[in-house]
Amino acid sequence: MSGKMARRRARELALQGVYQWLLSGNSVSMVEAHIEAESEGFDKVDREFFVGLLRGTLNDVEGLQAEFAPFIHRTVEELSPVERAVLLLSTHELKHSIETPYRVVINEAIELAKGYGGTDGHRFVNGVLDKLAAKLRAVEVQAARDAKS
Image (cartoon, rainbow, N blue to C red):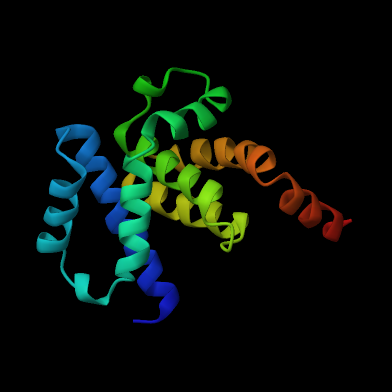
């Protein structure tokens, strides 16, 4: 599995972990252990990336929700668990994985929302993350806009 695919799979598994946590309320360590034990091909994922994403997200749920909440037109609790999980993961990645271009974070989030969410969930996620990226990564977003014009 290439590095890119190993990271994509790590994101998928982290999404499953956040989703599981949202529904079960189990501890981070229980969710992590369950994902590791039950996921086919776990040995091929970027484990360090998976752990950082899952733990980093679940250890700052309130802070991450506070970042994206201004860009949604309903309460966080009204989001589907998949949309909420995707937004939590992506917000964490936008804030803390500066080495990953914001467009990659958004594109990966869209793919996760398409694969696991409702019909138009990916459009909603895209709209929220576009606005959030402009706030959290203003310099990078502006540089991309300047390069286009």
